[in-house]
Amino acid sequence: MNDRETATGLAKPIETVIVPRTRDIGGFEVRRVLPSSRRRMVGPFVFLDQMGPAVLPPGKGLDVRVHPHIGLATVTYLFEGTIVHRDSLGSHQAIRPGELNWMTAGRGITHSERSDPEIRKREERVAGLQIWVALPQRHEETGPAFAHHGPGALPVIEGDGKRLRVIVGESFGARAPVETLSEMFYVDASLAAGATLPVDAVHEERAIYLVEGSVTVDDVAYVPGQLLVLAPGATPTIRAAGAARLVLLGGEPMDGPRHIWWNFVSSRRERIEQAKEDWRQGRFDPVPGDDEFIPLPGDA
Image 1 (cartoon, one colour):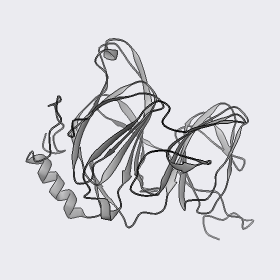
Image 2 (cartoon, helix red, strand yellow):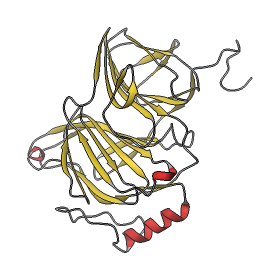
Image 3 (cartoon, one colour):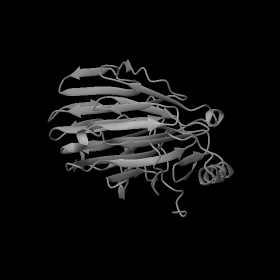
Image 4 (cartoon, one colour):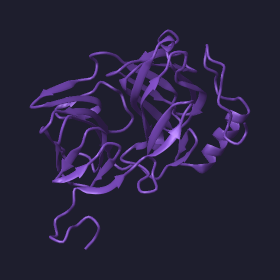
């Protein structure tokens, strides 16, 4: 009997449960879910941080200084608060709850993420998810790009105690307008007490991340801060014990493993070494209006 089967011979819907580790990013604590020693990727999703929830006192704020990326797209989605994004393309965009920032790094981009200067003057709660999507090998060196999807741009499905926002891809009969370089899905789901949510098996690799509230999956209880990696082909039903919030994400397996070092993702180790030297030597483009940067780890 393998670890996907029970004594009855029936496949278990949850293949792996991942509990995140705590990290600090610019004075702001996050829970790092992916990558994990138990699972490196779910479809193209190669990195997942839960930011907050945190209360930033007056005069303080989020300050993630300018840093580089290659070989990925950053996917930023907030539940509370405001973050201001700047990048080397000249983009200057605030993101608020229910909106999406999608930044394609490709061959190289730099950006910063900070609290809004005016909002910084007062107390603010901030919470959300920062996700990286690995790019297919044929697109790893594509040109950098940035897209913001504002209020009302992302489809919402409501009814039977559920409110679902499709952030990326197609799910629950709706498709988000976000342009991606591979097929995937990413959904923000809020459930009332007792509400149920069936999960289909359209994609081979899928996971559920519990943000708030407890749920059961096939009568097994799970709590916030857990990533539930579903077994291929499993079609479980999620039931909310009380009010709950969770995200569903996944896609097809990537076209080979990915190497991750700091903010760099690539199918080739030598490409990451090149990116390290490029950052060390100042060969990435600067961010207009923001000249504070994070040194290469080990060089500070």
